[in-house]
Amino acid sequence: MSGKFPIQPIGRFAGASQPVKRPKEFACFSYDDNHEFHLNDSSIKYYYTPQLGADLSKGYESFQKLDDSEDGHLDALLKTIMAYESEQGEKIDAEIITWRGMMTKILGAPFENFDGYAALTHLSHSPMAHDQQLRDERHPISRIYVASKEAQHKQQQYRSRRGYKFETLSTLPSIWAETSRDYIEAREDHVVNNKAQYCSVVRTGIGSSILCLGGEVDAIWDFKPIEHGKPINWVELKTALEIRGAKDMEIFHRKLMKFWIQSFLLGVPKIVVGFRDRDGFLVKVDEIETQRIPQTVNATPNPSWNADLCVNFAGTFLEWLKQTINDEGVWRIRRLPQTPEIEVFKVEETGHGDILSEEFKNFRIKLALQSRESAA
Picture (cartoon, rainbow, N blue to C red):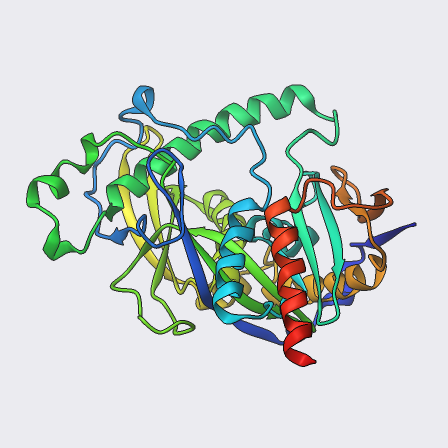
């Protein structure tokens, strides 16, 4: 059993956006400085304007980098969902459970031709609902452009470390009133550590599909509301090369697509972009409202991407995916580099593969039994 979803021609996805449900956070979790999991918001950070002129390359050698060579699967997300469902006494109503990163790739597919990816998915039926878990596969899916990709990977690593440096320069561990002046002024000298993360878990919807997404949030502008589901003034922190001409602007507008998708999916209202010069020094900081990005891009001649088209593509693809994956077992979702289609095919006839933890499977069985007893 298999299927292929054609990406081209993308014109068939043009038009007014399919309905989108505002992302609402219903749970969260944190990783501490050692990347240990905690079911709380202890790693939340607070935005505070960075100092211009800071060297984004400073401390490169002491960078405490998270080892992401091993796939953490959906374990942290599933643990958080279990805690919420245990408290509520029922399953969440999401049809698809995945990380924001996976959905970012799907929404950007009509305008991203060169990067391939693969994911594993599993369909889990129950008397109440069905869930589909999507998990990124970290191992290579293609050997095309190996040499150039290695060089690009090294460049990307260097750029990402500058990005993490910008996050360190732009955040505080507590609100401003509770942070010392010495700490604020010494941020350029702080060791950069990307192991600590705050992750938001939201309920959202695209088209006819209800999704549960988990994703890292960089910082908060003010404070987090006590009531679940209220809008939160999150801040996404990004870096870019300073814009000196039309070519730089074109490159930046293409970057805005990923900036917008990532923030749109989790309901992040503001993006703060730190612009660096060719030597890696911070020369400008801009605050961008997420909702205004599509309008900004569309106002330019020959825009390189369209937000409504991204949403319509994702909504149509997710509906097709739910219809295609109609049986138990483990399925693979794959797009090879420079190919105009996304493939879906079964790789295991039965079981869950390693997508679901034993803890989560046992919990869901127990929850289903409790629901039946309550309904009897």
